[in-house]
Length: 103
Image 1 (tube, rainbow, N blue to C red):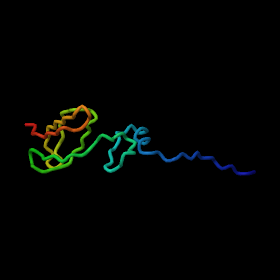
Image 2 (spheres, rainbow, N blue to C red; image 1 turned 180 degrees about the vertical axis):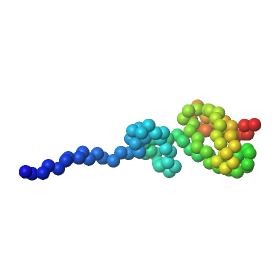
Image 3 (spheres, rainbow, N blue to C red; image 1 turned 45 degrees about the vertical axis):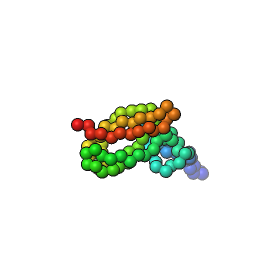
Image 4 (cartoon, rainbow, N blue to C red; image 1 turned 90 degrees about the horizontal axis):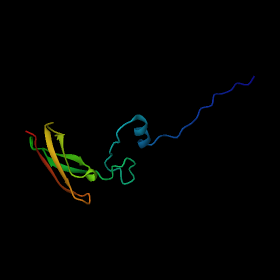
């Protein structure tokens, strides 16, 4: 009697967007990924800011696609909470980013 081998379905590998969707993950922005990024992070950019607490400069990610916004971000160096104010023009370009102490 001939022995039957189980058949396995071979699936193609998943792209990063499909993996994020499958596991309910937030997309990851990869600097330098280019315009063909499948995660929709085309409007993001990085801006250098100076911490109003420790004076160190660090890069923060901006996304002007949501318009002007105020939010709190911790300093990447000293971890103090910084109040960020992002102003965006009607055409979606960044007008200004202000970083100030929260106390």
